[in-house]
Image (cartoon, rainbow, N blue to C red; front, side):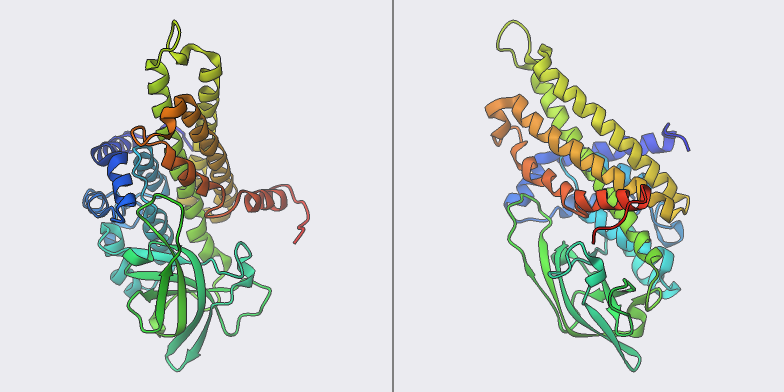
Length: 385
């Protein structure tokens, strides 16, 4: 495994950075403030092949992997235009369908997911389950050749711009106390499926929703994979989710660092620019170190995942997400502090990042649950729950 990027990856990184720069943070924040979608950016990213870079070539994708999709996420976020639906649509849903879907499901969904013409949300979190996925109560029961889905989901991203939702539930036969997930594709116009937006104190064009499944009838081919999927089916989506969460956080940290460094080079209060003072320089340098270490762990996770080692990728994917969240949250705060009062002005665009980057510590998995995973899986310590 090499950490030296190939020429193709360097070219991809440069091309995505150019696209992000073309739109920029002002475009992204304007969309967020005016309740608009980043339609133009999403479409152009799709046209350029960035959205489906990880999906199979035979279905219109780029034939690469999570390493490349993480590059797309990181570079867009570093330009202030991080697209949350990249985490969900091509990374989680696209990977699961590509690996476990039937030929018919792949033909129906993957080309659109690859081009960006189809967007798919992902529904796993529930109001009464939270991080405890073993307590999922959304249930699917058989009725002849159909499935009937009932339950609720919460904090589901981008449902208002999605064509379908990949829903994690249980079959009626699944035993309680043991996670035996069943995955269903639910088109958003299906009868009995509804949602409400959750008011959030975030400046983000992609919104959060609570979902309701009121005896939603689905055809038999809505099921992806096995009726009681092994955890491998979830790892196929949750490892990419963590890798992309890390990429997003690293990109946001880079965005803040670039702003702070540019300001510290120029702002002069006494004899030299403030960046010459160690009280300013050292925290930014430490933030750079932390970001680079998180990035290396993200690259390790993506490389293992792309090699087909789902379980091997789980540890570095969780570690990368944790490290990136910690580093970027601290760095955004330090960037605001570096700019002083200007750090809270609209002109410099850092203030919205304070809330946005904070998500990385709680989603898609909280820092405490990552530490639980490392303690129990890597260190072999006993569970407390």
